[in-house]
Image 1 (cartoon, rainbow, N blue to C red):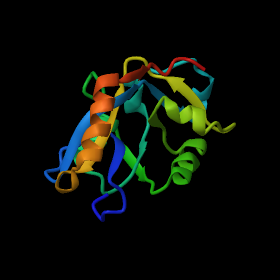
Image 2 (image 1 turned 60 degrees about the horizontal axis):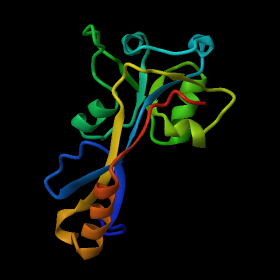
Image 3 (image 1 turned 60 degrees about the vertical axis):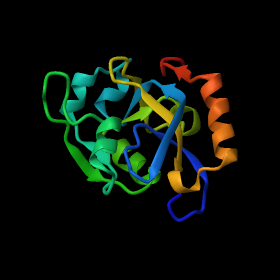
Image 4 (image 1 turned 180 degrees about the vertical axis):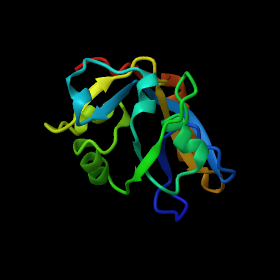
Length: 164
């Protein structure tokens, strides 16, 4: 987007970059924990369990953005360990399926990446992720404003992540 290859995108929020505009929320997604080891037999997970396992993470993300995706601490204050580093979705699934790490995902991911080596556990007490429109402030135009107005008027779609 900053290179000018795209005009607008959908990203998890918040976006707190001075050159980017955080537009309206498009959808809010519940959370699932991707696991590939002993937890796979459980029906669900709770946020406090995130302190028991390392979490795959992508290096180079702004700290506030990474923390909006996976909190740095559990509700009881235990540190949520970041690591191993991953660069692609395939990397993420490799470390999850091997049991090296777990990672919370937005619920919509299960629909697109069903895998026999990954179990998806609902985490109802983990904050949902809001996804919204983002664009470069200097390139805002009538088309972007009109699209944002439609999204704002329709309101955010909410998915809890608990359905199959």
